[in-house]
Image 1 (tube, helix red, strand yellow):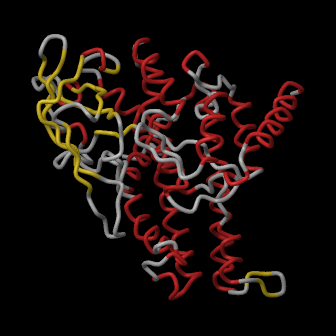
Image 2 (image 1 turned 120 degrees about the horizontal axis):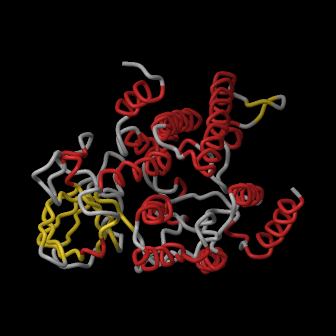
Image 3 (image 1 turned 120 degrees about the vertical axis):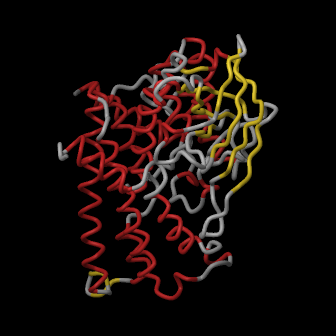
Length: 392
């Protein structure tokens, strides 16, 4: 305990000294989040400095081993870091599918070559990743994917199409599920491969959603060369890795139901919008709804903390990720509904700088997709009922 208290004091002092003041405010737009990558344009010098300082300590991936650029923190130290960042409302220095998804998979299943090649650039925010999973005919039934990787000796030639590929038009590399053996049961002939998005034959096309914008793309793969040393794990054994990676994706999407560091709570936003009356939120009907949301959100926070502690203790996340994904996305949808209600007719303003180009209604519309991406809510409920509750 004494060591942890020392770590807390040192961490608090370091954050106070090194976190720029402008990075201690709520994220207002996607540009406020630093995604990194070869083509990232920093919104400000402070955003660049904050990323570089945190990456130098390995705190963009705090619990990764130091030999791959991570922070090497224990689960207790990582929790303290999160708490101290939240205390000063520090923004996360890096938003990254590399940190959240493919990095953990490489750490668990990848060769030493892959770890040394890919993990340090992920930590430094130098490479931005996208995920090639869903296909036009293989979304919920992901194991039915048809993107084919033909064995050419020391490399594969990949042909096929991926869809709903988040930020594919901005990504530097893709982690992609491909069929390497069509002659076996469909789950057994899949591999997870990595390739640079500038490889000849890779093209992307954005997909616009009802919100007027979208991170999603279609990705077309035509005779794309992928070296065999870019296979994560064993050839034809990618389904196990795919399921492992999905738990991280669902946990990440479920995190949308949590109040992030540097983000105002729903209660604070309600006070900003409605004001106080006799020390209480002025709108009595919304007051009870906001209170109910706050209680549910707190319960979700505690559950997520417990799951994280269990995972770091070696118990893994497994099917619990379906619970986090389902409840987190439902919480986020409720949050967006309440924000719309708080602002009344003003919530429908679609454009203009004073309204952050219609951020409120666009986020409300976008939240509907959270219950589809990463596996629909209906699929998550099936997983919960079968594999957690034991129902048949």
